Image (cartoon, rainbow, N blue to C red):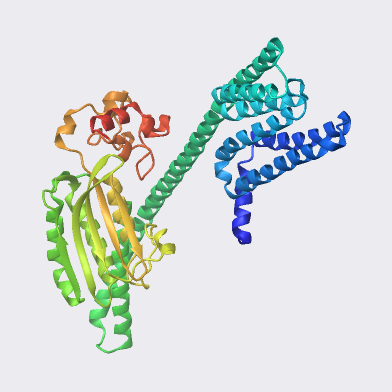
Length: 505
């Protein structure tokens, strides 16, 4: 016997897929069974013939139970079950007509019901086919008892086809309307999800912008008095006697001032306005410089440093100093994640996302990894998993900001105890693409004529052939493009279709 779990699942599936046509098939069987007993009661059938009708009824009940058992066991195959029911129902009506007067039998209405139901469920073509089969079965059943009346037979048969045509056409229209409604509902749900995603990105971008302005103001106000405190503390430390408690206190003040200055430096880096010094750069050179700069520290920490530069990597438009800072931050975090040693890998490669080619720098470690709870927060400003005094919680936030300024993204894959991999994804536009039609030229949005640089779309002036991934709805940050904001989904944009088609996507 099946367990309660699978039975409940089958019953739930059957209920969820039960519709008007299923009700019709069920009512047909109930009415047919009640109808024959009512006919037996009212028509005064001789007692010696009751056994025949009871046998026919038993046959009907038996195959009906079998059909609904199949529906219960295979609820998603009900069309096949209903197809199987047709010859059984035809044989049932055939037996009734043969044993109740042939062409004069009242049970001919069973053919009407079968034609109507199958026309409604399968459409006009199937309905016409069922009407034709019913006509043949009626002719065969009636001919066994009596000769047909040509006009009466043709009238009854023609009504079968007249029933099949309107019901089948109505059914087909209802089915098309239902599919259209389901398609529109799906598109609406997708649009709502996309709108929520864009709204969340906009809220996050505004929060970070407000936080950047606040921290910048606070950092500037604190920096001057902190410099004074540090200066006096250093002078005081030099004057105090070695080994005295006062000298230890002064040294502590100096150390904390240095730590606060480091925090302020990170805050100012996080909140600064972007100043572009973008050039075509080979990121493999950055990997080599990073490996050289951290070589001694890795050996000291028992960390094996591996560099895996990709061959024939295209030069990418980046700010060399900013990217080096982002890579350095990731390397420091990776080394801290391997207190007992491990392997640090610097890797370059290419990738394709949303139809846009990216140059990628991966920084991988074999350290402690990051828990799923922390993964959702690691890019938040001032969030850190390190002990107090070791890190400001701004390293990854600065990396994310640098990547946003490069119209790129930072991705992370990590699991506790298995290490982490951070990927810096820089959008790459082949030089020859700059001579093709750009998005602002195609859409006429006017961004190329905007006087205020801050109001310009992130796709301008370098990424007009991949606007959907750097400024549109497929970008990691908020959608900034005028056209993207109007359309709501860059995949519906004519320029997107043109460029993706040109690339053979």
